[in-house]
Length: 290
Image (tube, rainbow, N blue to C red; front, side, top):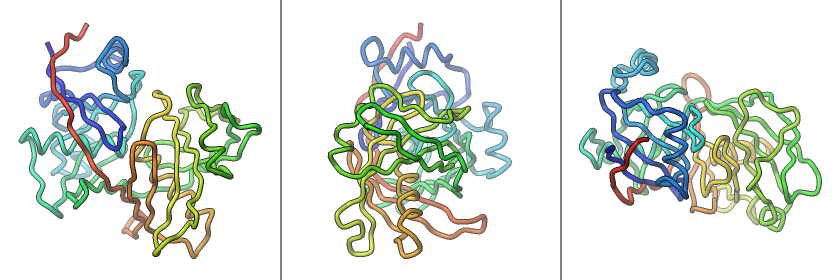
């Protein structure tokens, strides 16, 4: 029997399995069964809690930041390996704190290893803030076809350590009519796929110096989720890019599972983007890994 904890960040839910010494590698098939909402526990992904020193991928994290004791081994619901997860890393840190594996005071920072590099997580008033690092326009700007849209739409490619394509829609009605049970099609297709975000601006777009948008997302290897942390950041970055030089650096992004905050700020290696929001643990249990 394997112990697990279930948690979520604005409805983006995860199975958390503590494996500090790296003795429990999970196969793609095992992850897919665990995440199955009919035959397993059900989740958008699995967070395996491993010490960076206990798995090969952790060596790069420790070389980048020796204090990054813990590594977030994140898998999508289909069992595929993912580079990063903005909601997942907040839930990951909340689990470390609640289980006594790490401590982080209000305003203090905890470095976490990921396949996209080390990410710094800070305790904040509404949960946790994660510095997602430097971002860039990927140059991959495919056309996007999705059920519920009458014509293909142009997408903007954004790299946050994992790939995103952001699509602007004209109205709340278009956003509501989207049918994301089938993954959107990208033309041309991207070799590693991408998370695809569909966004509509708030009315007005900027209130009291803060940008406001609404978003739905189809996550690579998962399908539509109630929230996607890096997707929220990519959405805010895309809308600011489209809005021009006078657009703000602080955003509120509403997703079906709640609202998350995004902040852009300068750093030594270029502009960084930070995501903040809640993280919750909801139940614990044990399950056989078949």
